Image 1 (cartoon, one colour):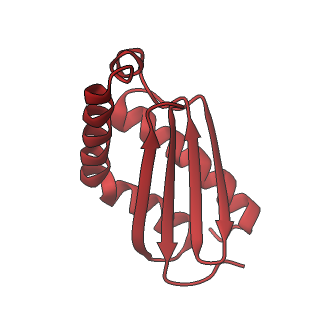
Image 2 (image 1 turned 90 degrees about the horizontal axis):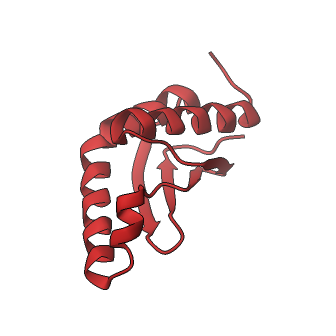
Amino acid sequence: MVYTKGQMEDEITKAMIQWEKEYKGRGPTEARTDIIRNMVIVSLRGVLSQAEQHLAREKEGMALIKKLRQKLVEQGRPGLEEIINRITLSKVVSLHTDISVKTGERVFVFMLDREIQ
């Protein structure tokens, strides 16, 4: 199916929420996707579990959460790329991500092989 840019953003948001739920056992409280040129930017809020929020109170816990979440994304990357490829009909060239353990927010930036109009 061919989507408009707005439909792609909505479909990616839904798919990313579903991926978080299936892969990590819980989804974010808020999610948004923006497509700018050849970038798909997905921001997720409320991604930390209660236990992670507790761990994040200490510096060592913050580092542990970041390391664990990075590893999970690395292992789940094929599924993430498939979501973006399927919806945008574009190839993911690179993936960049970070999580704020203070705010419970995570950002994904997918760089594509072409611009989305």
